[in-house]
Length: 110
Length: 111
Image (cartoon, rainbow over all chains, first blue to last red; front, side, top):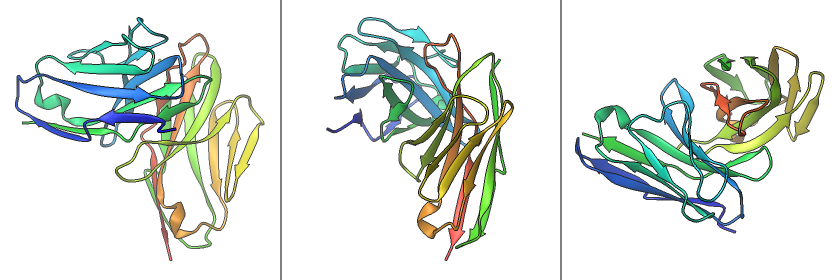
């Protein structure tokens, strides 16, 4: 099993550009999450999904959108990137209470 | 609002020098407290879940304990490969399993 994978690993954007981060899991987990990690602030929840076709806002959802069209995939979109969105983004999935994390995407917005 | 505070922010130990990391929390009904390990450039790796005060769990040189207000991660006779950032997180009752994380303790074990 590959577990949780994220695409791409690195990305540099200019302010105003858009992009989509892809998260895929092969563990048949119902729950999926997107976090961002910034120095000194820990991981903060952006959006989450409790099942295929459902999404909900987390702690810091502004500027992001998500979709969960297939159970195994959870997409995070930035419609108009801003420098404040420079961060490392982690996807996670869970069946029980423990969450399993992907390797992260490092995004820089210039 | 759920809050998690970890201390110290950074800790340097000599190999074999035992110590403890602290995680203080406030939550509206605790469903679970989680410890993760994160290596540089990688995603967090699950270590333990604790559910109720008095509970303890062990894995190799690590032992996690829980009270009603805080959790400790005890590291006994650490080795350089234990160097990592250790993250604490809480999950509140009634939540859709969301985690609230602390900012972590960066542990360095010197040979």
